[in-house]
Structure formats: C-alpha cells, structure tokens
Length: 346
Figure 1: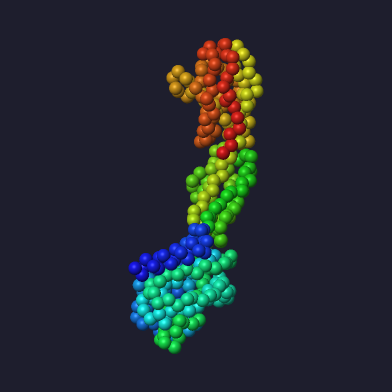
Figure 2 (figure 1 turned 90 degrees about the vertical axis):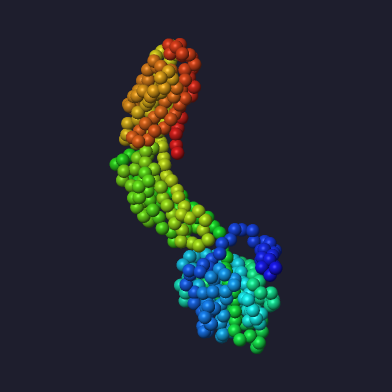
C-alpha cells in the first residue's frame, strides 16, 4: 500500500508540474560519488546507497546537518527535476530542505535551485521536485542543510536521490564541397546537433577513412562514392546516439536533344561532372536481357528493339531510368515515347 501511494504521489507531482517532455535519469550506481560533510556511516549505509537504484537501502550520515553528496556523471546534462525517497525508519532524520549545485570541473560550483521538503511519516515515499534550469553540468552537489527534527534525530538519512534531465536527440548533417572531378580535393564538414564535445568517424563507401569534424578526400567521385559520418555525442540523456549522416550526390543528367518520327534513331546528350564514361544499357522487352548500347558522351541510339527500360552505369554505380516504351511495335512507325529523361540527384 505504501509503494502504491509513493507511485501515485510521484505521478501526481509530474502531472501537476506540467512536465510532459521525455526525461531520463542522470545518476547511475557506477558513477563516482563522495560525501559532503563526511560522517562515518554504518556498514551497508554508505553514500553509494543514495544512488544505487534501490529504495530499500539508504545513505546515513551522523553529522546530520549540511550533509549530502557529490556525483561526477562524466556527461553534461541540463537537470530540471529531483526525486527524493524517504528511508525505512525514523522520520526525524528526513531532510527538511535541499540545495542543488552544478559544476563542470568539480571545484567551481553554481547554484541551480534550492527548496523545502515537507515532513511526512510515510516511509519509502518518493516525491518529485521540479525546477527551471537551462545550463548543463557534469558534476552535481546535493546538500541537505537541516532535518525534520534535528534535536530528536541522531543522523540524516535518505533512501534514494535522483536527478532528471530533459531528453534531447542527437543529430548530424554533412556540408560537402565535392570536387567536380577526381583531380580536385573534396572537403566534408560535420554539423552536429546536441553533440556537446562529440567524436566523429568518417566512412567512404563503408570503409573507415578518418576522424575529426572534417574529412578531406582526394578521390571522391560524384554519383559513385558515398560519404558517411558517425557522430557520438558527449552529452547525457541523448537519444539517437550515435547519429549518422550520408552525403551522396549524383549529377548525371540525360536529355533528349532530337527526335525524328519514322526514323531508326534518337539522339541523347549526356552531361556528367565526373571523368568516368557513362554506359547505357537497354533491357530487351522480348528476352529480358540487358544489352550494352553505348559509352560515349553523345551518341545515337538505334532503335531496333522495343526496350522495357534503360539503366545507366558509371563505375560501380547503377541507376535505373526507365521505363522507355514505344507506342508502336514497329520502330519505323514511332509516334511518341514515354518520358525517359530527367535529373537524378540523391
């Protein structure tokens, strides 16, 4: 019954506060934690029990007032909520107020918030305290200045303390300055979102090629090579981590320049800002087999078959550009064609 009440009060506090944004817990049992105003806690009631995730253990400090703890999270977070759970016995030992401070070096501290805690005889009671904050920190110091009944209590005790931060999504994009041919230098720059101090890994055609926020490639081929970046955020409470981005640019265009009725030929102009030759293949609608047509930059395509579709191949890259069908089965009596042409950019 007490556990049910604790859950009800926690959820009610969240509802009343209007905190609808997804949040995540900051503290984990593996983090480094030290006492504030160190006492000599009994065996099994040391400071690590304050963030061990178990409300049935507790942290006890015989120094009573101005006690608490410091946690090094190793991840920058913007905290906006604290959950506090009362321990198993002696309500007089419960903190009556709190102070939360943040730091990014463990030495210089900034006040984030402070407040009062109403005394309550219910044990294992979890309550939430919401506050405004927009600054990220990686170290947190939580201090309990006084107790519900200092004269009666012989120590301060808490079962569990947790800070929460609003979750953010990591993202990354690539600014590319690709060369128009193989002889130039292509530079790619990662643009992170919610990265903190991120790390990067660059891949060219799925092979790791470099690290750091920028990557330079002397052999990038537009329409053939794919550049990817993997960004790992240093922030805490981050979803979509690591984040990925892909740069791929195909500048191949195919344009019909001339068309003659009742003739055997159509003319196409190929434009590609890359040195590789472009090969044109047609797939015969009768046999279903691909047939190589041409690899020249400007060529005459002789229509002796009714092609199902064409595709373009350049190096290891292949792009389907069909269908292309004749209205008449007799290529010498062609009236029109379905549109085949266009700009292909990925």
